[in-house]
Image (tube, rainbow, N blue to C red):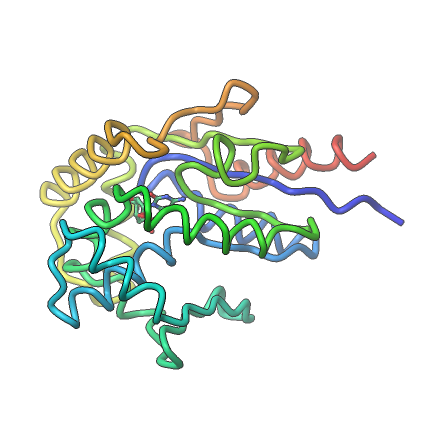
Length: 224
Ligand code: C5P
């Protein structure tokens, strides 16, 4: 039987992680898990319940009573919070602007990381996020750190937002991406950082297919 490995993909916002991870997972017949969606789901519910986002204890109390389900589907990963399909709602500008504050709380991360580790336990997984290689799946057979220039990432987010009907401008997206990079990289709990054993993949000048093929080639070497 072919070995089913764990593939960890980390990197900043807009580097192409989710699009590329999805293709890699489909190609290998693996499950794709977008961990950012979990932090977004917590942020979405906290905003709805008017919970102070700097209050780690209240957020934890809320999270312990929350059911977050990630469901792979042919349209990509669906996200449910307490039975409600929030797949689109967690992509709003409001959630995006606030998610890094929620993700900075160590207690919130601990709960979500345990869930992520459970989901990946049987291998055959492509998981993307910020701390997958450094914390969640430290033993992943393949670790990728994906990045691209801020300009390129803003451009990609702009096209993405247009498709989703979310209003934005490239200038505003550049600012938001740079701020999120800063918050995610400078936080104390599991900051965004390249793992020592991760392979750096700059996608600025690569097409989606080229980036996916690079990872697939590396993955195939690992399962041989
Ligand atoms: O990947 P995405 O942009 O949806 O992630 C949203 C936010 O969730 C990130 O900016 C980061 O603050 C947080 N996140 C994280 N750790 C992960 C995945 C996402 O802190 N593994």
